[in-house]
Amino acid sequence: MMGTERILAGFDGSDESRDALHLASVLAQIKGSRLEVVAVLLHHPLEPRLAADPDDAAAYFDWAFSEARNELPGIPISRWDLQASAISAARALSDLAVDEDIDLIVVGSTHRGPWGRVMPGSVGERLVHAAPCPVAITPRGFVDREYFRLGVVGIAYYGPEESESALQWTQDLAVELDAKLRIITTVNRPSPGWLGGPRAGSLRAQLRGALESAAASVGSVLEVEPVFEEGESAAVLATHGAELDLLALGSRGNSLVRRTWLRGVSAGVTRAAPCPVVVVPSGIAPRADGSADVAASAARSPPPA
Image (cartoon, rainbow, N blue to C red; front, side, top):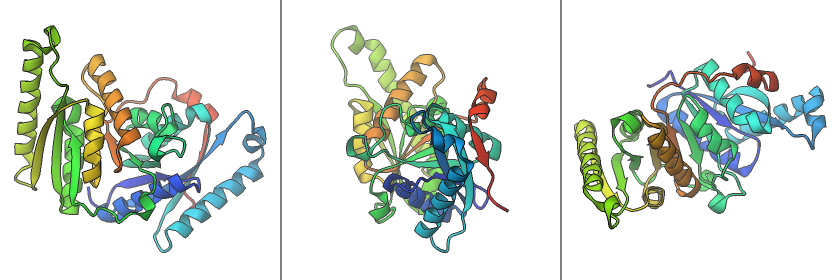
């Protein structure tokens, strides 16, 4: 992983994007990665001038990149300029990640969400389910924190199909940080009747076994803390976030039901956890049909030579 990764930070000059820029910078330094910054100009029907006037667009991108450089003086960064409609911004960022082999995208929260977190339907929330690479959502106020001071990195683990890629990503980061790895498996509390019967017991045993196997698989590499906890998954994980430097979770399951459930968990965690949250896809996803339609509504410029 060292020295070859490319980390892309979304930046628009807002406080939330400053958080993202600093998290991306810290991770790039830890991993020896290349830091790249993308400024996104959203075309809005109420502001057609921004979409139509090249001089205004160029001025915006120059300003955004200048602000990013002022935030990180002396740190080499590359630049991307991206124009997209508001509804296709996440897709345009995902396409950029595919085309340029980006290894991690870092975006900020939205100031409109509770606790400065991600609003339902925001670019960040759509991106975590569309991107071909891990996506980090940065909590509001991260720029003012002492980075990675707790020495504990966490992962939500639900078995190899859903979480193996996330486990590997988090394990590598924990090794690079010389941090403890907390592997967290959550299960709903038993309910009366059929839902709390043998089938529920079998699922609990299966999840506990998967947790123990995961802990054993990385225990020889670093200090591991397995946690098996009852409760609503997103709420439990968000609570753990107060004790973690970063929390990772997988985004794709091996069935429609699992995928839908994981989307709900990841959305709940990214909206509520006080630490950075990284959503890791189970593998590199093929580009969806219709990418040409996005390309028609989005324009991007490569980093200057």
